[in-house]
Length: 353
Image (cartoon, rainbow, N blue to C red):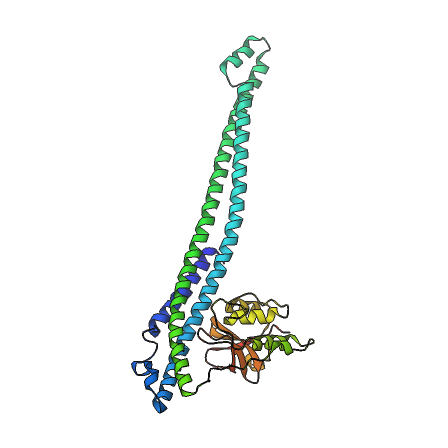
């Protein structure tokens, strides 16, 4: 996709995320209704009711943060691509400048030759008086015309080549500026969504901890216990499971912290497989383009589950028996939970085959 088209697509994504943040009203000040903000004053049915309300609000905030996360990752990919193109354009510009310099040198050489071989009236008069005849006079006159034409053409070439070099340099600079601006915008949108999500998740955690102390504890299963002859699917699931309890951090791909696509990317990297890179949509697109998508009804352990429609915002590892392992959202750690069906794509990616 041309840089300009990619830029428009990226701005559309970030604008959509900004709209979601505004429409949901998810800010640190509105993360919960007034009656649910003071957890310390709640108990019994009132606390249970508030936990339900807070979970709904936190879920919406988490989804918005995930969408902003994915939009930022996409913007970073575009920036990297633009930098690569800028490097290529810079090389082309240097080559064009070299060609221009050579053209100028050739023009100067021809001009010098013109001066030596017939560039003055005195030289022509000398030929006429030498008695060598009209043939030699005509030869010198035609040669002078030819050299004058060559000089003009070479000078024109040099000017054209230099203009091309300048244009390539300008294209490179503008390409990087456009995507860098888009990336910064996506980063700011993510920060706003992350802040709202953190506030909402904190309230849920506080309410759940008050109702059931220790409810946020995790049970980590060791990856080191995996047999050496384990299948790719078993290795992927075991790797993801070994990260349970480690925190979600935007843009992280371990060790010690993860975002959703960073976890899946690293889980497959542990088997020596590349699933497209760091980003939900790049992983989905690689599976789609290589024929590795299968119906969700046929899901097997190690398959990737996607959330969203068109622009996906979350990915998880199917671990079997209706469960999945995910790095869920800011404020939560890697966990193994029942599969959520809301926003779940009807296909899974099978990179294990």
